[in-house]
Image (cartoon, rainbow, N blue to C red; front, side):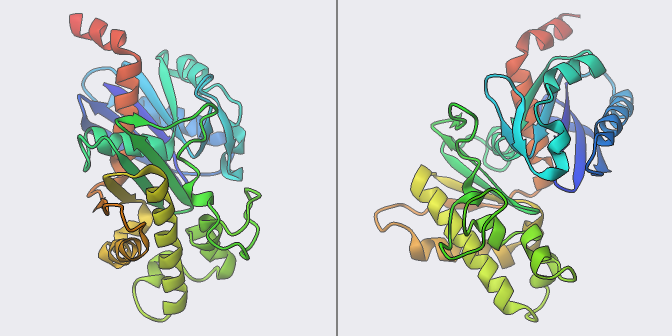
Length: 296
């Protein structure tokens, strides 16, 4: 049984997973300061007390770059700047007395969907989450890409899709995320939500621009990683086919001619993708803990 904590863009999502099945969950609003850590601890303890059995490991997801060597978050947006360089594995041991794994949220979501989710068994996959920003992750031959410093596969939202576009907070120019994401839309209009873009044709020009940017970003990821499936996830996918169908059509029109178009998947429960991945990672990293529990 694993306790999973996902520090998301607008919510902190907590879950307890036992043998791949969701047992209990809780969501907390993000305040954007160190009080989020205290709130997560309180909620996690209450959640664990509600289930039968005791978690044996903790999985923690953060919306930033995680060092493969240390497990520390190297970089994140301002909302979670207080987590930078905090040793979350030590934090988990101090607060819960349990071993922990730490992973980038999009990479954890990809692992979740390919292990026990909508793309179970797939070994060559790309995941794109469309929400507050654009998160990405890639897997080749069953191995999630991390790279030497943890950046591999997760910066697909920061590939230039418009060389004459605005400067992104990351320092690059014309990134997909700075052109088509929830925070990018707020920069253009604080009264318009992404949800409203797909409810009517009142803002068709902006909507179509977003779809082209997302399509171009996915084409680039497919050209780089040659996946058999593309998993489209995130809050924006609540619009369903209104998002996924145009993105897939764009990809088919612009894909390298000799490539086989990948299968597109929209998870039915994207809110649990990260927790599934964290559970898989925690169980794999600390198998002895689970074996000891089963003996008793």
